[in-house]
Amino acid sequence: MKLNLKAFLTGEELSAKELGDLLDFAHVLKRERDQGKLREPFKGKTLALLFEKPSLRTRFSFAIAIQELGGYFVESLSSTSKREEPEDMAKVLNGYVHAVMWRTHDHENLVRMVKALKIPLINGLSDTHHPCQVLADLMAVQQSFGKLKGVKLAYMGDGNNMLHSLLLLAPLAGMDVSYSCPVGYDPDAEIVARAKRKATELGAKIESFKTPEEAVSGAHAIYTDVWTSMGFEGQNEERERAFASYQLNEEIYSKASGDAVVMHCLPMMRGKEITDAMADHPRSILFRQSENRLHVQKALLVAMLGA
Image (tube, rainbow, N blue to C red; front, side):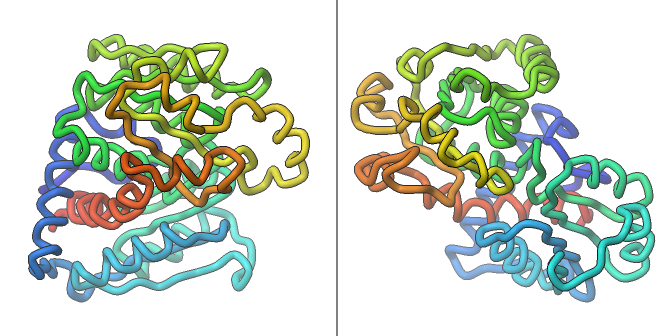
């Protein structure tokens, strides 16, 4: 498949049809991998992996994805490289590689880099968006219910990059989203407004609630994330007090639909935002979500590089 995308920064670059096609292709690539069939369209092509934040899933999934597609990767960690302006980095990388993945603190770095980049750029995570994770999440929901349209996803926790990306991409796939965040930890108002406008156009719903119990009522999927994300460790005690009633546990789960799935982008803090019972629940799809990072990112690379 081919997408006319120079950058994948928030997920808003996709139309509803393109998102559906991308997910369909990811399912094909997973089936082929399970059967021992691999496509190698990227012989002689190299992907740059730039990391300002530590990573397990992003690092492994992108590295394995490009290698299984026949290409190579070169990794750069912020701890082993000097600080450069995003525009200058882009001009250097234009002469070396065929695509760039950047896991960065400040989303503005990606916005600046793409202006000087002549090759595709993928957001591996930023402070405000995590679109690759949501592609994997949507694929996991499809695997659980056989569809996305009409499925209700409830998010409980910090109004962070994960919630932003869920709000922007889940309704694009026809899902309804409800969410609840503690006072003072709400998602970015401008991103919520953009997401609601798009959801209305597509006939999907986004609703916010004061309590997690209200948000998860009747939900088919319950999603949570760590209470303290990277970069906010100094607020840990304050956040634990604020999020004390936001633990995904059996009581909360009982408010959802009887076949609801349990979701988390990982890494998780067992006993904090999620109990062991929920993390290991028969309807937990946490590790399916993490595996799907590989399949959706392979699909994204193929689509953006035009192989």
